[in-house]
Length: 191
Image 1 (cartoon, rainbow, N blue to C red):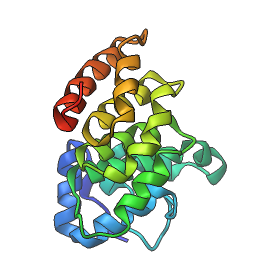
Image 2: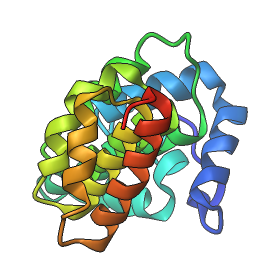
Image 3: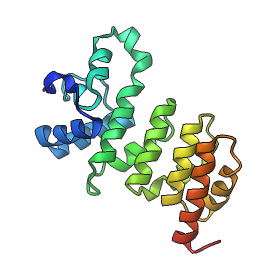
């Protein structure tokens, strides 16, 4: 297991991920990140790279906790795995899309939010249907991310979701609905 020098202190998340890609190799990084995001790889798996590659000082803190203390915090590793996929992706890597789809139904709102962001950035068309219920998530950040992603990958049914989001009490969801509706109308050529 390799450690990121200085536990990544001072490096922005994108820089940490890019350094991990350069040091570990893109294939290793993508497989590990997808495994974390989708829940098939544990945050403390000793056969995988050191978690500080993705989570920096926060990951170092998480790894110092006892398993009982860390278990309620393990969603961070799944979110960091997703964040890595914002910066590094390969359309030919078969494990990426299933990991994103699995994360859209994760019990942690941070993981669902990150998966929606990845679905939008990477244009994961298969996520369209799974994003629809997230537009009604109890957490505004998840709703906003889901509505934004629907603007990128949604189909006709997403038009009504985007319209409804414009009535959301949360300003971020409202703005996401406006943006998503415009994108959907342009992309689908439907009004």
